[in-house]
Image (cartoon, rainbow over all chains, first blue to last red; front, side, top):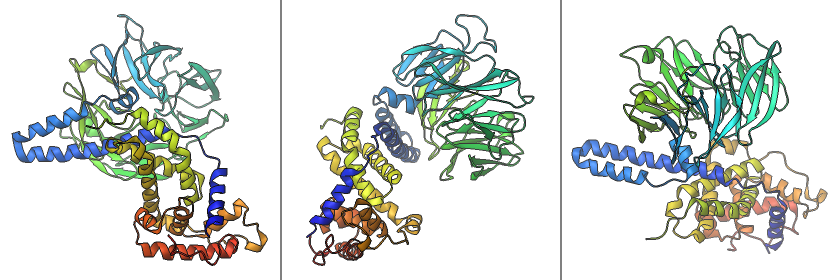
Length: 369
Length: 172
């Protein structure tokens, strides 16, 4: 007697417009779940080690052994991230020679974009912004644009790179597809730039919008529609990171993470007049570094916060420069080790060893230019 | 020692099972975006447990169980309860053709989330009362009473031709 209802349900199901599968997204989320479980296991193991003393070392070694399971190129790129050290660029499973002085490294869905100076031993000047795409499989390709005294931005879930450059009496936002090495769009905009010393405002990109930080505001420039409007609540005169739809409003005594409408998502009080904040590329985490932490001793430690839950953990030790993996782990240089750390339980995994710490450039860290 | 399925096998599995999982998810939730999110979540959880999947052929069943469990956990959230079901009843049965698909979806939208899930699992997935109870982590008695209530409401909206009075909750 259930045939008619069953038939209608099947008819409805059959007629559905099923969206295309996104196995990659499921893989990415699944890796995050798996990693959180592994990290939790590692944290418990670390506690056991502390309780047992030297006898626990075997357990740690075993855990490290599990971590050495070979990941796919895409997984290694997302989980281990990218850094430059000792003359080589480490991209997930691969080590790539880049015959240049690397300034900054940015994640995209097509691979990492390396901004470098000229090849050889020539000094790097502000006018030298050569771009190279290094894919997760270790292959590389020189890109056409050059960043002449400007700062670029990317997003790990998109192949687009954005930057601004002078155009006429104002500027234009440029959006470039690094996967195809083709120009996607240019959008003109105006705004003062007395606050910064670049040739054009520094930018961020999130979805279809490029955010340009000018004197009095942050401009949200939709490169698809060409519309330009202020980012609500953003004061300008500061390089505003906008990551996956969130940005951090640094105020006296607190850092407020907001969405694109200006609504408050998370407030982090800080016991100093000023703090710097660093959003993860996927917009899930923020690291708050009290001013004292980067100018003196006896400082309050930096803290890493999961924006959605508000969970926070300390990041003891020197915090800056701070890099990231594409999936939101903080990349840090601790002594001669490159470590990847989570916000959930402060679990850190050593993902690389370096001979010369001075040579290190972590992806998504800013080293000045 | 069994071979650990690869990422490639997972990707292949995800593509193969996507449409089927999406259809079930959509019928249970009635919203395309939420259905897609549910399937993504279920596949992500399946991937997280992928090393435990010793036989790739068992993966579809595992993923479907995860999907239903995840939906069930969503139903427990207060916000989900508050947002559903709609208080606006669809047009009465004599104004609609019960074979009309929008009529079915409108009628399902009136049901409480768990009632809707029970109907979908029983009459689309063809699960028994015991299987539905296990999937939703409720008692068999709850499944029967939810089924009975759901069918009574659907009968009002879709008519006896679709939901005859003889359809009860005890048949499994």
